[in-house]
Length: 498
Image (cartoon, rainbow, N blue to C red; front, side, top):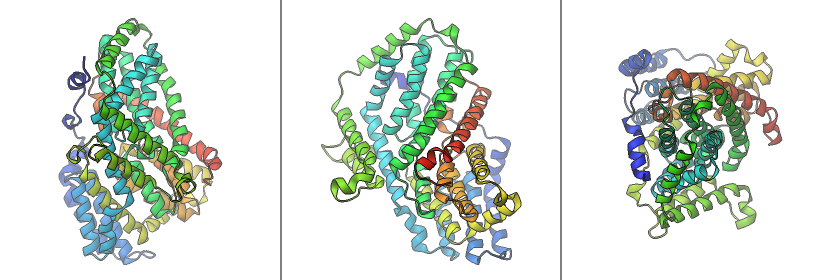
């Protein structure tokens, strides 16, 4: 069975995955535009509250308008971002050069480069070869195979900064395993746990690597720009990856207890033979694979040595520039392996991020966020709480907030500025609190509609909505607990004061 035929036969196309809207979603989709306009007009017409500037009030109204529009998704989110930039400028809420200049932010360049690298890794077939090699070399028993699949998910997160692409890569391999086992969708616990752990390891691996999803990159941009942080690739990796690995290890064994599959392991040898055959059909490494591997290793080395660049070269190469260099090498004639038209750059996401940045910065710079958070503190009494409980409340709320915000990028733009404002108001370290909250962004694992990755795995039919909800809620609780404890232990060792 060739890799291409496997993919075509067994892998759901993300573009073909649709979800039935719930009652609330359907209502918002139909009435989102008038509700957003009414909210904007009402806030503009209300008297300016004490402690809030006129520009701050307008920024708050535009941000609320954007939030409703993004959640309702009546029109594409990038169109809403364009409208937001226009509103900020025409209402004299935010300078035009600042609002339109967000498209030139470093984070946008990093996202463009990440999409180029993703396209190169997929075209070269390097990531698929690596996955098959790992399974056939180290998956000696069903439990070891499950563990190897988790390890592969974590490993290829470095190579492929796209959660959907990684799911599209690994689902066919899982399907091969389960088909040879004659695992029946909806009845096989081995199928349930394999697919559910695919969902979870994809999400948790993503939380450990700054460049593994656009949401992490945007969060770092906000932390550095608004909170005055200096978070780089290695800072995120060292702080978050151990927490992601610990959480995944705990939930791996929890999953084995929830979905026991002892009676389904008698065809394991046949499974391995099938995968070895597919691996052999790949043949020797191609020139494109070798090029992709060299470019990737160069990028990883430069990212890992970021703090020593001055001593090594006499100048610094930022995480953003490293990604741009790697993307350039992928695109260079003869040196690289891609043409520009083959780079699947999501320009709609670029425009969305630019508008979201503009709205977030306007709310921050005009004092709206701090005013809202100040009133929230007064109503909840957070200012009287021990800092440990503030961290716990914030982390658990952000962890489960994906039940409301199905888009990671929307979630980032709403939560991170608010968390930074909260920390400043309470006299806490805004970088530490925002970083801890940001580590929860990718835990969109409780329901199939919460991400394309969930939908891809769910469409195989091996687990139910209830299966995912049960396992997802437990994993989110474990993850939030690990992050909360880490703030007062691991974070302190790294120099982040609570």
